[in-house]
Length: 288
Length: 181
Figure 1 (spheres, rainbow over the protein chains, first blue to last red):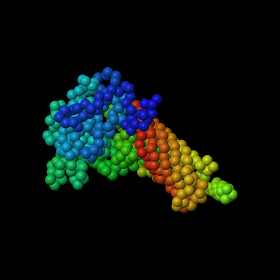
Figure 2 (figure 1 turned 135 degrees about the vertical axis):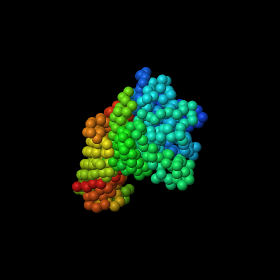
Figure 3 (figure 1 turned 60 degrees about the vertical axis):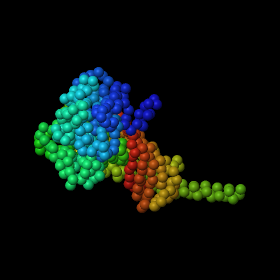
Figure 4 (figure 1 turned 45 degrees about the vertical axis):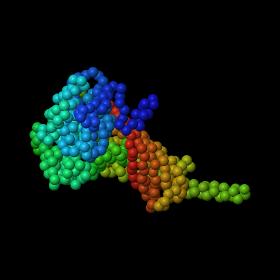
């Protein structure tokens, strides 16, 4: 009973007894920050689809905990779910964050047998800066700058990408401190880095399917980022879907009655987004 | 002692007068949370004052269609709230003391159902939500029956449907405008 009340008050939700947790698993032993929390459906099945979460926070803040509730919920639905930490700025300057994300994806696939997942059915999902990194994994996984030099090695693109409120064109943020910290300097100093780090400029016909989820009142990352990226992918013939959530901001969601706002809610955690993600995952990496 | 009795008597007369005036004041409010409008939705709240008990009770009905792009959604919600009015007086207020004005604290419950369709009109599922909240707010009535009511609080929401449920809590805020009559 007491646990239930604690669960009720927990921001990230509560682990169900049918989910096995592997917390703080290092995917690159060279660094303290490069760890992931893995949530496994405790049913002994193999060949399950998987989802890798990348948190946001302006490439400078945040932690894997941002997606703990979401990952547990997906694990309860039968997916192998992992949520990663990665090197943040100033340590995680270009291209280290991209390399870490690729390394984490390679590591997850490398543990297919241990964790009962199908390495050919892995989606990546991220929010804000995490949405940016997820998009890059989808369209720029073979960009030489982003090739990971970790033990897990390079890997292919994920089979699907869910990008929540992710910046898709960093050239428009060239004077934002957190972007400069990620790139390592201004656009005048490193124009080629801004290009390479902008998913919009990598749209390609062989990209995996994308689902964009974005609040219509997001003033931090305007919804045009997702609209433009979706359009670029559609022009290449890629399956790209956009869930716009009118009136929702970057970290402001809907209250229970639809009449009030709630702080700290990511648009990918809204009920509409949950349903869209389940449908998208079923269409792309399959149903567990 | 005599002076104290006189003071007490005057005080109860004043309170009785205040209550009588308040009882004659508008006791029903219909309001709309302005924070719902950008969500492509509208919620209507009907509130009835019970001045002798310092409380008012609220019933709410809301509908919104927040999803756009390649999707469409419908959310229908109903709610109930009990507000306890602390001092029943407020600044910038045309209503008499003793009315349901000024500071209040409230408990609220909402239930709702959200359904999602894709661009082809295919039904993708439904999520049911129940939300419990505790709020504090302040009601101004700056002109005749017009009311403005900002509020803040905490809400715990449980979602179920389309797979496993989950529960989370958050800070909530809103601004409502309405008319008392």
